[in-house]
Each structure stands twice: as C-alpha cells, then as structure tokens.
Image (cartoon, rainbow over the protein chains, first blue to last red):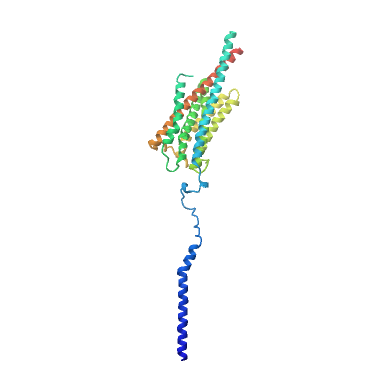
Length: 111
Length: 218
C-alpha cells in the first residue's frame, strides 16, 4: 500500500514537472517574441569606413554646387565689367585732356 | 580706336551672352556634376592669364633689346590683363575646388606657381606705378621672370604629383563638352584682344599727353 502511494506520488511529481516545463516552453515560444517585438529596434552602428555617395549624405554635410557656380560666373562677369568701365573712363579722361591741350596749343600758335 | 573694334565688341558681347546657354546645354561630368560648369570659365581665364604673361614677357624683352617705347606700352597693357585674368583664375579655381576637392586651396605645384606668376604681374604694376623714373627697365626684367614661369605652370601637372587635372584632359573631352569649351575660349580670346586694344590705346594716349605737355613747357 505504501509502495503504491509512493509510486503515485512520483508519477504526479513527474507530471507537474513536465507541465511546468511545457508552460515555460509555451511562454518562451509565444510571449517572449511578442515582448521583443514591442521593444524599440537597436540602432545599427554607423559605418564610417565605407564609401557613401555625396548625394546620400545628410544635407548639413553636402556642399551646395549651385552657389559655387553662380558665385564663380557672377565674379567673372562683375570683375570684367568693372575693368572695362575703368579702362573706358581712363581712356576718355586722357583723350579729353589731349584734345583740350591740343586745342590750346593751336589757339596760342605754339607747335 | 581701329575700325574693327566696334563690330568685334558687338560680336564679343553676343558670344558672352550665349555662353550661359551653351554651357547649360553641355552634359554634366559624371563625378563632379554641376560644379564642373565652372571649368568653362575657369580654363579660358587661365589660358588668357598665361597669354598675358607671355605677351608681357615678349614685349619687355623687345623693349630691353631696342628700347622702343611702344614695346613698353604693350608690356604694361599685357601686365594689367595678366593681373585681371589671373584674378579670375585664382578665384574661380578655389570655388571649383571647394566642391571637387573638398577644400578651397591646396599648395599644389600648379596652383602655387600660378599664384607666384600673378604676384609677379602685380609687382610689375606696383613697380610701374611707384618705381619712379627708370622703373620701366626694372619692370621689364621682372616680366621676363613672369614669362619664364608660364611653361612651368602649364607642364607642372604632368611632372609633379598633383590633384589638379592634367593637360591631357582637354584633348580627350567629348565633342559635347569640347564644343562649349572652345566656344568659351574663343569668347575669352576676343575679350582679351578687345581689352588689350583698349589698354594699349590708353597708354598711347598717355604718351601723347606727355608729349603735348612737353611741347607746352618748351
């Protein structure tokens, strides 16, 4: 009688252990992935040692080409225009001075 | 002014008005993109800068040999244009380099030699302006050094390690890029000739003015 009681106790203990293991396995299989899915994704470390096309760089790191091109063309046009005006003015002044002096020379009769 | 001056000035103005359209229709260079368009003004400016240095040197050499004042006037006019086109080259180059090289300036052999040549031209003008009597011959000697630097500037990219494009770039350009480039070169050359004519004329008029003052003093 006692041996039957001990045998039944062992069987029940084994069943409880297996049930506990099954419960833990179910929890691991169903619940943990769901919990993991709710966590924010971990950020991947930035790979600075790889080639990044300039077009994919953040805006702050890009050099605007349009501003440089407009600046270059504007500089050339403005400087050339100012130089032309400068030479034309100097030439005009000198030519007027020559004409005035030559007229004076003629009027006074000096050669 | 000579008879051809006004028609040439009109043609030059029309050509310069057309350059933005011609350049806009040129294809983009694959690695540099939009900033490559600076090349169409930078390179002709650089060539006119070198042409000015050569003209100034040759005229100075002739002045030192035979002492004719007209050679001195030619050298003076060419030196001023060397400073003008050198300034355009040295400003448009860094604007291009900022994007293409990631830096405004490098002490690269061609860039540095161009700066030295430009400074020689500036020194020539300063000497002529403040050197007093006799400075013409000193300035002419200086101009010879400026001219000697020109071939060095041109070939330096082929012999020294540099990030500046080599002289082989222009001949290998496709027609779609070479056409606009040669159009810009022609426009800049015409501009150079017109400005040079004006500048020489100014020196001639100054010489005439001096002659008139002398005749009044006598």
